Figure 1 (cartoon, one colour):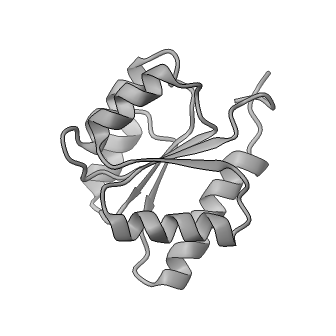
Figure 2: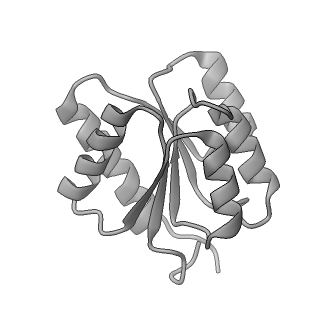
Length: 138
C-alpha cells in the first residue's frame, strides 16, 4: 500500500468480546484508522470485493459461514485485496495453522495473548507496524 491507501482497518472477528477488546486497544493505542467490523467470513469477503482496499485486515481463524483460512485464500485470489496486509489474529498457536496461513498468503500470524494488557499492547503494536511503520514499494 502506498501513502494513498485507505485509512481503514478491517477486523474479521465473530467473538463480541474480542471485537470490543480490539476496538479499545486500537483506540487506546491512538490508531487513527477507522475500524470496519465483520462478524463472519462470508460477509467480509463480499464487502471487501465492493469497498476500497483497507490499510490492514485483522483476521480471526474460527469464523462462521466461511473459515478464516478460506477468507485468506479468497482475499489473496482477488487482485483488489491481493496486496493488502493480512494479519491472522487467533487463539490458535498450532504449528499447522501457522504454516497453512503463511502458505495462503498471510503477512503475519499473531496468537492472541490471554491478559487484556498484553492483548491490547499486541493489537496496537501490530496495527501501528502495518499502518505507520511499514513501507511499501512504489
